[in-house]
Amino acid sequence: MAEVGVLLLNLGGPDRQEDVKPFLYNLFADPEIIRIPFAPLQKPLAWLIATSRAPKSRRNYQAIGGGSPLRAMTEQQGRVLKKALASRGLDAQIYVGMRYWHPFTEEAVRQIKADGVRRLVLLPLYPQYSISTSGSSLKLLDQLWARDAQLKSIERIAINSWYSRPGYIKAMGERVREGLDRFDDPDRVHILFSAHGVPRSYVDQDGDPYQRQTEETVDLVMGALGRPNAHSLAYQSRVGPVEWLKPYTEETINELAQKGVRSLLAVPVSFVSEHIETLQEIEIEYREVAEAAGIHDFRRAKALNVSKTFIDDLAELVIENLGVYSR
Ligand SMILES: C=CC1=C(C)c2cc3[nH]c(cc4nc(cc5[nH]c(cc1n2)c(C)c5CCC(=O)O)C(CCC(=O)O)=C4C)c(C)c3C=C
Ligand SMILES: [Fe+2]
Ligand SMILES: [Fe+2]
Image (cartoon, rainbow, N blue to C red):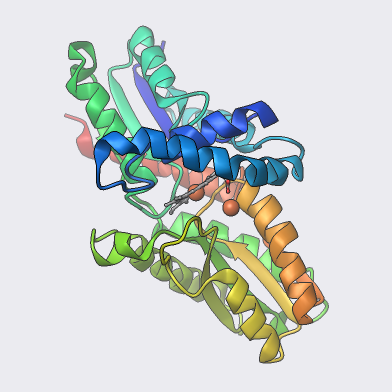
């Protein structure tokens, strides 16, 4: 068994319709996702919010085949990453640890112990760091390590964010270029980067670097793209009554239509895999918004998935981090 492990961290998603409500409960029970000031109320409120959101969420998953493709895609990324590492001379075992659904992070960690891994790279599959995503997964791992003597002997190498890596930016640029070149007149297309939102208070009160890193990502991708297109950044997937990062994607689509934009390429930013936010929210909901506003040529750039440029860069990222920490 390999001495080096790489733990891919992601959010997880329901595999089937029956999983939607328990998945939502796990998500809302996490104080990094929803802050309930009085801790004993976190779980009962999580149950209430999950119960009220489940019907809408189930319909959305139904529209993309019944469940989330996130697990299958993350596992495929893991297999391709293993090969990319092997071709660079590193024999590493890849694990997938989801935060709110199977395979849970705790299950992955049990396997990591059983396999006798000595050095473990923690690699969040979120390019930009947010308290609500990478932060939550890394915090859970801290808690698991704190209470387990056997785990303490495994060297942990945590990667917080990797949005500014030239390989990732190049891979994003390739996806944008592929998307643009499907239009009749690529240079006249407006590029709308759509990032997952977070509540505004995460940034203003808690110092979440997510917004800054997302803005930087867009600047870097536009710089690497070398095309003359106009572009904007907006935030999608708002949940609940509080204010989230603005502008909201839906409002931006309407404003762009009013300004005369007729061809739009939506580019998902915070996700490296297809999942409900790309397949349902962008492809179905935002397409309808665009159509209704008069943008009839609405397309979407593919998520990175197993882009060779992207996976090769992840392999380099893992190797560089192992090198830095090797003694
Ligand atoms: C309510 C708070 C939420 C915050 C904050 C949040 C941040 C956040 N999420 C992602 C990526 C993903 N989110 C996914 C699903 C999902 N997220 C929320 C809520 C918050 N996310 C909900 C309620 C759900 C369930 C789906 C739904 O009902 O809309 C997923 C999984 C998608 C899948 O295919 O199953 C991902 C991935 C990021 C990147 C982020 C902040 C930066
Ligand atoms: Fe989310
Ligand atoms: Fe959503």
